[in-house]
Length: 70
Image (cartoon, rainbow, N blue to C red; front, side):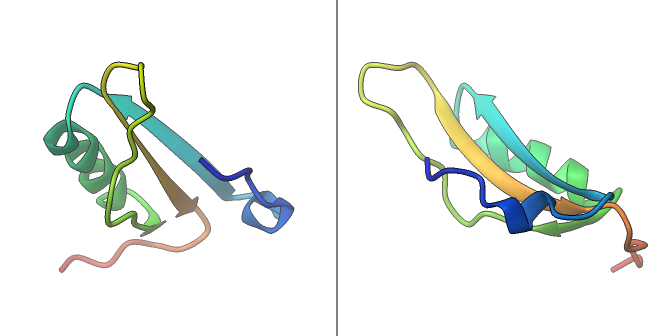
């Protein structure tokens, strides 16, 4: 995965979350759970590292914004 850019965590309330999961379904379920609690710049795909088990997903959170029900 690419390095985390300083802009991603430049202010209080901004965070980068990296999920390691057994499969895509689990990784996206965790991202969806986070999205119910705060604003998320969601990932649309996972990554796999050759020789490592499972998948990784990185999403960006903004805890400063309230989540409005869909």
